[in-house]
Amino acid sequence: MFPKYDVIVVGAGHAGCEAAVGAANLGCKVLLATMNMQTIAQMSCNPAMGGVAKGQIVREIDALCGYSGIVTDHTMVQFRMLNRSKGPAMWSPRAQSDRNQFARKWRQMLEAHPNVDFWQDMVKGLIVKDGRVCGIHTGMGLEIEASAVVLTNGTFLNGIIHIGEKQLGGGRAGESASKGITEQLVELGFEAGRMKTGTPPRLDGRSIDYSKCEIQPGDEPAGKFSYTDTPPLTDQMPCHITHTNQKVHDTLRTGFDKSPMFNGRIQGLGPRYCPSIEDKIDRFAEKTAHQLFIEPEGRDTCEIYVNGFSSSLPEDVQYKALTQVPGLENCKMFRPGYAIEYDYFPPTQLKTSLETHLVKNLFFAGQINGTTGYEEAGCQGLMAGINAALAVKEQAPLVLSRADAYIGVLIDDLVNKGTEEPYRMFTSRAEYRILLRQDNADLRLTPIAHQLGFIGAEERMVRVHAKNRAATEIDGFFRNASVLPEDINGYLEAMSSAPTVIKTKLHNIILRPQADINGMANALPELQSFLSPYDQEFIEMAEINMKYNGYIQKEREMVEKMTRLENLHLNDATDYTTITALSMEARLKLNKLRPRTIGQASRISGISPSDVSVLLIHLGR
Image (cartoon, rainbow, N blue to C red; front, side, top):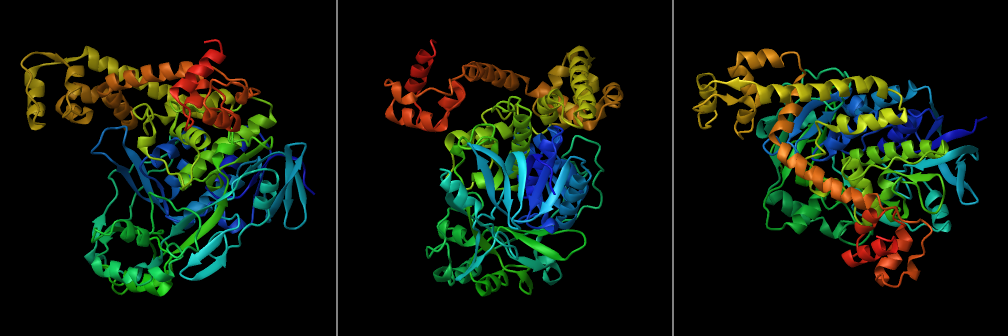
């Protein structure tokens, strides 16, 4: 009935969809197995993509020929660039999406890919022979063979939904949990744990008084995520902001005795950086108000997502508290918020390719690795799919370094440090964030995709070359062209910048903190004429490169120093217990995690500088 597939992807959430694309774009025949074909790429929680550091990840996925950025551009209802008041390393794109259109577009794009097949069924277990995965067992009793398998099970592994004192088996509201995989993996020697996440109630937008809320419009003109020619966003929908108050908090406290989070029924740890509303008012008892974002679910629905009000309290307590929020006094609830507890596998059991140490050609991606967020899941899925395909082709894995991408930071953190709470990406986690900006992801990563032969990379490289060429040409113009005081001082004074008294290079002007390239172009017709052929995106990147060149060069020097350690490879067969000069903790962790390089070893929690020195001596350095 089935051919033998190159790669089977289990689960069709954000990680699973990108995993299928990653393997398919390398020419592999892929089967995407999901329990429900109607929920492919469903936005289980917030109908939004991007955000602080997450927006950079979406752009990196796009630069590697993934689909998340393209789908978002086609289906967003609002776009905002966050952190514009800060330096460009912090700028992060975010889009409010149309939930139904987002999933529909994903499915259309997957079905249009000739290398992707689908099968609707629960996957009950894996076929493992001689330490290698060989396929899957399904709920219908079928065996489907494959050379590699990627598990992207999300919150479905033995998932339990909590609403007050009620417990319901399920991986998402209205959907069954997945049974069997955890038990088999534990039998194979894997360590498993439990984590928790949650989602807010959904409201009827017709019952909200928006006049009592603060409006939050999108950027004009709207930006986008994909470096491809996706359509511009017009007719943006606004979001709104309101706040809780002391009455809301007092009402929520009346349900604490029935809260699964406080009475011990939930064992798994929840996300530190996206806590439930009850967790917020318990941990920050001194705060009398918390911000809530009233976000539309799409153009063709009145359903509203209450961002900031995630809860697992009884539904009557949730509803009563909501009616005490300004603007929500007469709200109608579509469904209450809930918490969900699920199995995960500590990611220290993985190689940096996301292949497991214990079973060859078996890869994990997404929440099964202890992460939270669509973007974190999507990038892991893409990398797991790519590396599954490369494993099938018997080629070396693609491992992005911490200097290559936020994706590299995320995977390096997971594999070397592990996580005991849902991991979320932040710009602060990246030590080279001035290099890993949202505007240059294509320059960093598309050449890698092109070198590996990804479908679609050839066309993308044309734009990469044009962008590099534009940056060089604009920089050259600014270094060579000069401006007279009478031509530029009016602009400088308007910017509260000191006037110049001599003819000066444009490059000296653009380095001033108050100066910006578009403002200078408005004041200087010659500059405006020169810039007119270039895309605004190219101009903006050139300006960043000129203004922050000193910082960029310093980070590149730091990268070069770290690269020396990354190029010192460790023998995978080394028995570290025999290296007695290492600390006992180092011996245990090195034997367990099997780092590939000295650089990777140095980032493992508990490995001291003296341990690194011992390893260097062991290598004859």
